[in-house]
Image 1 (cartoon, one colour):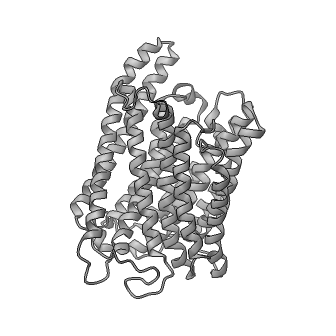
Image 2: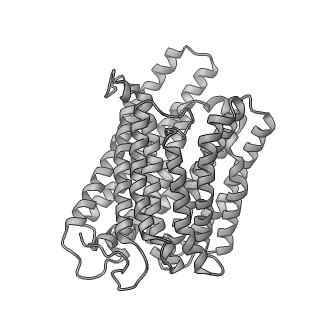
Image 3: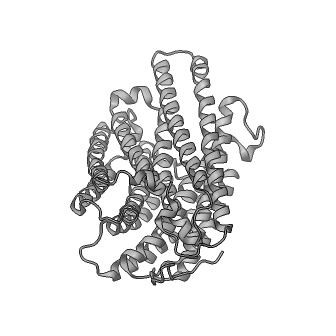
Length: 467
């Protein structure tokens, strides 16, 4: 497929490395497929039908760690890098510091992902939640994160734009925070702080990985793509900055809420609860901003599938924030802690929110990158509905399973009773997983057929991605 590196279909020189954007999207979607298959394999062990019985390096625990790591660092990180390579040059009017460095980072990142997966399956995972990347991979990741930050911060600093658009605020913060978070989470609990102190830092890392890496980059991309797709400015730049500073102030204090009712000092636990509720209130300003931007053009959600993906993810974001504030209350934690409620919450935020935003971005960019209109609008619709219904069903199912498990544990029911009560929920989870997987297969087929179809005679517009 012929893809120009820097010149847009409209003839404008926008400094976008289109081949690199396409490469990151393809790599991210390949990681998504691996992540879904490993997730399904793990789910089937709860139905006494594990796919790889007796194979140590494919044991459920190791497969689960591959599932979470490949989706976070393979799927989300790859497509976010694609989005940054598209958005930053267009906002700043300047290219990244070095196209050669961008390509080096792309290939190095895929090697890191392969080394992480192989290392975990071989038994070299670190005993840190969301920090299971083998210790010999961590230094390479740190160098890569610093290189990414330098590559994108250069055009932001050189642009000299005043006032700085909010998307660049989020990008700058995310690029600076991420190396610091990764260094803290992968080294401090492992080597310097054992026991409850290490757990407190680990909880900080778990939550900051979502709130100070994925969230600022995700919101920053939305602040770029939503106005561009709708062809109207964001409702309020001032309100958007309230959301940014609220995130920066409250989110770093949330981490200990992962370890409520633990030996960590109660003042830290209480502080995490208050900070969690605080950040959810601030997030409301972001939701209001995007909702107000849609005012008078609600029909765009019907006409534009990228917008439908993005706004569905925003709705899921509001739901997950309400759930987060509620589940961090100490009285609620006595029921839901260690149950499938937490698993459902994690799937809602990582896949239902950020995954949906990614699908919106990919649906918008793919026709532009390959220079062809979508092969099938119907397949895109099936992708949306299978993924949305499957994700919603999975989350509701796991939340319900968590409540059943929590109340049985509270009542000191025999462990076998909990397993029998959970079995139908675990079967339903596997069914919803198949629905999600089917949706992605249809999407992959549509991506391939679109790339292989006859070139469009003129520029591909946003309407090409309409539903």
